[in-house]
Image 1 (tube, rainbow, N blue to C red):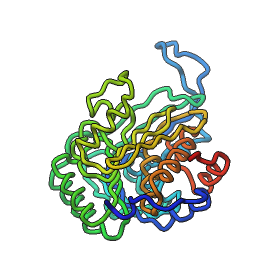
Image 2: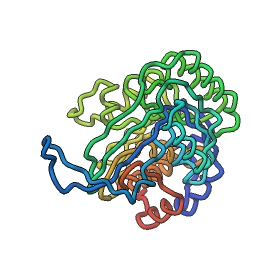
Image 3: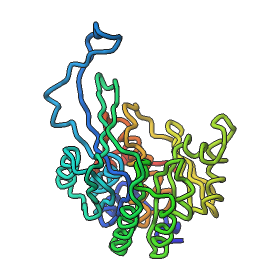
Image 4: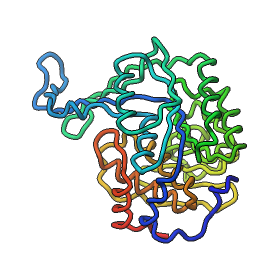
Amino acid sequence: MDKTLQEGAASGDPAARIGELARVRIAVLGDVMVDRFIWGRVARISPEAPVPVVEVDRSRENDGFRLGGAANVAHNLVQLGARSALFGVVGDDDTGQHFWRMMASQGIDGRGIQVVPGRPTTLKTRVVAHAQQVVRFDVEDRSPLPEGHIAALYERLLQYADQFDAVIISDYAKGVIHPGLLPDLIEALRAKGRIVAVDPKVQNMLAYRKASVITPNRLEACTAAGVGLDTPDAARQAGEILLRRLECDAVLVTLGEDGMLLMRREDPELHVAARAAEVFDVTGAGDTVVAVLSLALAAGRDWRDAIQLANAAAGIVVGKIGTATVGAEELSRAIRAHPPRS
């Protein structure tokens, strides 16, 4: 097991040590996208069809575009002070231009981004009124990317792997994660001593074999393991099956309002309760969890400390509307206000 994944000594004050995360360097490989938000209010129903009429708030147009998918993972990392490089693909379109501008403004290293002419940059547009999504419409191409593109992307990541403490694989099933090529990449990264954390998709689950940790939600874990959601201790059973099947070091199942459950091959399970918070929007919460978990592990924190930090960060972002991140000061204040229970 990687030395950074070994259980460490007592961590003391978790909030006081958040600054340690800033020295970590993490690469993110995955499906890059742009999230667009159109803000407004609903005052009437259309006379043309039984649908709400959203009156757009023009004053919030500058708040419309945000980094999404794997790019949101990288954004979460840099907001916590870490250094991050992104590996993925975008198109040569207007959305791609928005992506590059946002990347530059956030200081994310784009050395691993390939531009694929003719393929649209994934764009998810959400219309939000009164803090509720009214509709979402997507522009994307989910067809497989040419194997040569993927092989070159993975090779570029390996070329720079020694410069990073960990690699996060953010799979949104948009074509960057190739189930035939990914296992060799994970094996090569682990051989170099890198932590490999995966935010998974069910259809590619077998490709994550021997990763350091995967972070499925309850539905993803149960579906991949073939366990019914209404089965007693479903998440625990699913986690145990995935541990055996994938030979990962750990499986962290996110349970929404029930918190998180960490399953490891050789250690007792860990469960942390969800932070009491009003949930406005779960968009991107999984991105925050895998980012903070990976940061903490790469900084040498033990598993309990890492999942408590990830749990606290998730509790913050679900209280925000839209694709959101959490900053170091914000996370520190939240932990001091509600210290994790051992």
